[in-house]
Length: 401
Ligand SMILES: *Cc1c(COP(=O)(O)O)cnc(C)c1O
Image 1 (cartoon, helix red, strand yellow):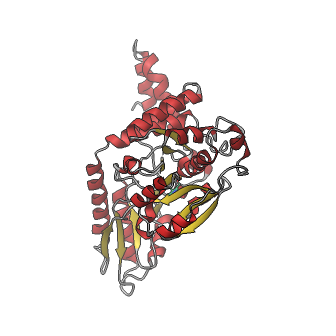
Image 2: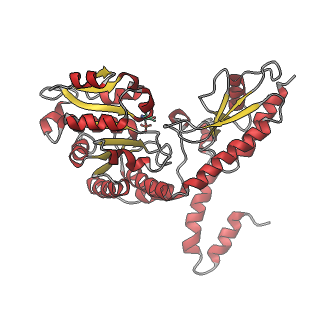
């Protein structure tokens, strides 16, 4: 039998074939032969959780990887690439302007910095000292979240309000911005459209964090159309771009100011949130390819995965399944399994642990609680569903009376 390597050598001997096919194919083969994660003792797993940063979130589709590798092969002027990528992104999203950031959290910082400093070089240098700048960001109490640290890191103070009257009373000469957490829309008294209207009424810029809020794909332009001055989406969640990238889009003057507050400019608050050509190009291609996807087919496939796992699990007595759709963030089908603990004598967190420790290793969704075992199926790869279905049934069955 000839090995693959032999075949490549034979092909190389055919005039015209060698120069083209062999070096690339051999490089790919060599790379594949080096199992880096194994070498490092870091075990990969099936991602049946979703787009969680600690679990490395999403996997770039091949056209995005190709863009990354293409960028890696060429030097360019970073600012010119930012101009061009930003213009194309703005076009795709229906924004005045856009930029690639170091994730949605990075966008919260650079965007807020831009709002505070404008194009003033003194102010840009001075952050997070706010001398001569506005210093308060208003937000609804129910919209406070861990990521607003990325806003506070510019030096501003968050002031919480609940009602329209409180908001209008709070707006004053120190009000820099009104921050909105899109996923909290249902939890706050002031909804998205009214937030925008109040911002415009008082000439205060509004910023909507929509990091995890595609699908639906329409959201990419929805909140810009609604009138938010800035919006951000995470790059490495639903759009499956680089996990370390994101998009900030909105008003042209604010995007220009945001860009002055980050790399390649060294004396800036966000210099540490550097984005290079690989992230920029791959992020653009991710948005392009996300817009072109067959979203109905994605939805069918996610439902099918839920059903396949549910069907296997329900073969164990007392197991019940439910497919649920989180309303805004991670708005994709998730599978929840429940069972009678007197019949299947194991808790959902224990099953989650056994899945993680098993072979293949499987990470279930962190939404798992004492009451239910949850799977987020959208980031799984081809062939994963059957493996997850088999392991879940196996674990539940062996815990059954
Ligand atoms: C994930 C998330 C972020 C952070 O996104 P990154 O792209 O990882 O920086 C910010 N805000 C919200 C609401 C998120 O869900």
